[in-house]
Amino acid sequence: MPPAFSPFRWLLPCVAALAGCLGFMAVWTFVAVLSGKAHAWLALLAAVDIAFMLRLARAPEGRGRIALAVCATALAIAGGLWLIVATRIGLVMGLDPLNSALRLGPVLFEALTRLSLGTLDYALILLSLPLAAWLTRPRR
View 1 (tube, helix red, strand yellow):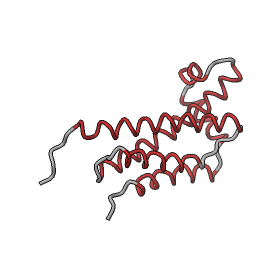
View 2 (cartoon, rainbow, N blue to C red):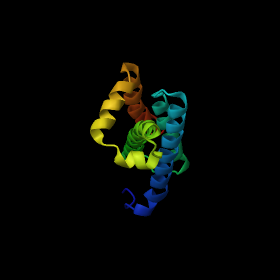
View 3 (cartoon, rainbow, N blue to C red):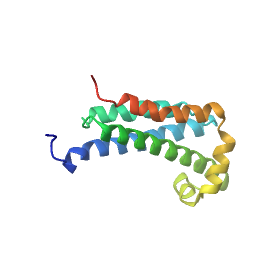
């Protein structure tokens, strides 16, 4: 019989996934704004980082850990790209990144992201989601 569900069992893994997301969003934004390029290959490193954080937090094996890793990776990618676009616009308009991110709308975000990413960038971003699932699969 499987153990009963306990929300406290998932508390540390969820906090670790959130920390991995926020930390990687900051690193990705810093690198992209400093260089002026999107660096979509960092999405693969985000998947590795989050999978590593979940293993360190001893997330229970199974579908829950895989789903958490994929969702956290998607959140890190979306948040990182949002902050990159917001910071670039904020620099032009004289706003700090947080105010610019709060004022950025989805249409402008989508348009500027589409202009800054190429086919290879989209492929790397999409490849990071199955990578996160593969890295957090149960060991055999």
